[in-house]
Length: 264
Image (cartoon, rainbow, N blue to C red; front, side, top):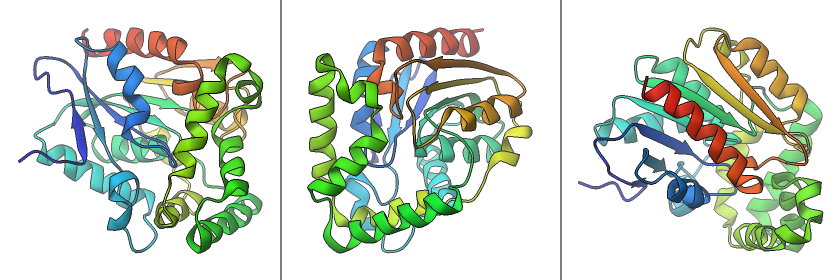
């Protein structure tokens, strides 16, 4: 039976890349990446519990551990036992947990605009208030702007050539349900997973932007320091969503890395 919550390009003869999306986005955020890599990799895109078309499945906070277990169960049900993980933002929090729990399954780890840290106390309090606002009244114009400034860097937002991207993000945010509060709380209240990085032997690629305010460069530096086998690329003028803000650069880095790891 086909899982309606799992987008799968289905080429059984190609290396598998599991793409894990950001909070506030969904599996469609990887559409351009999938198109660029068509015929090169098999792309599998789960939808997180409590998000996207699964928003109404969550009635309480969805922790990162719960999200990771849900993804693993989905992949196992699809018969997938070997794959690379690509996680952006929250997707990276989940990817680190899966890589630690499933070392024989994960062939490569790619973290984009992500980290493994918990939210600092001051930010946890502030973002907790945002979660309360989401639950109470959804995504009004003021909250749409707050989320937009988290998801896209200042350079991107000011670039007239990227106005369509900014508008697309704004429409995506405006379409979100108050029910997303359960997934949002899971991200805000996430436990620190930095210690898991020390034990990962899988080849890793880390990409971040200098304009990322949600997962700042210092957090990325800590990830890079802890991973034993890692390549790191920091992109100037890019914010929290490098896959969308600098798609051609990210695609080139990602495909070159995965070709070397999955086809060697």
